[in-house]
Length: 143
Ligand code: RB5
Image (cartoon, rainbow, N blue to C red; front, side, top):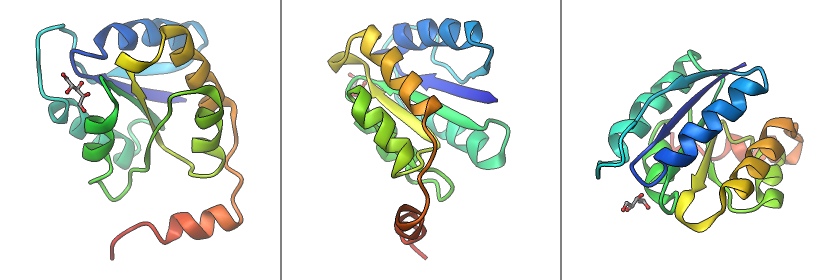
């Protein structure tokens, strides 16, 4: 399982810690930046991560910015991406179970690092429920 991670300056600290956490759990990780706390544009990191998940280079992705919204908006412009914002463990579970998010988006300025880990764990260990949720997902793309 290969997980791509990206962030802007607001999410860089959580990204670094989550990369270590995931490596410790035996996941392969790919870092799409940023690696600096200098102000930057989330789009410059979201697009490369989205392309890597769409192409299959990465199985899943995690994207982090201040609110999560800039990352989610950018990622969801890609047809093959379902990026879901999660701010607590229950939403982390449901964003996989109901929405089959292939990129998890975290709002670093509004959750503790401990919560971020709990959300990531929930999202990674939950299975997509399929059924009526698959039907809904099939209706998302703009044809
Ligand atoms: C950066 O200040 C902030 O705007 C960004 O991290 C994010 O919240 C945008 O959606």
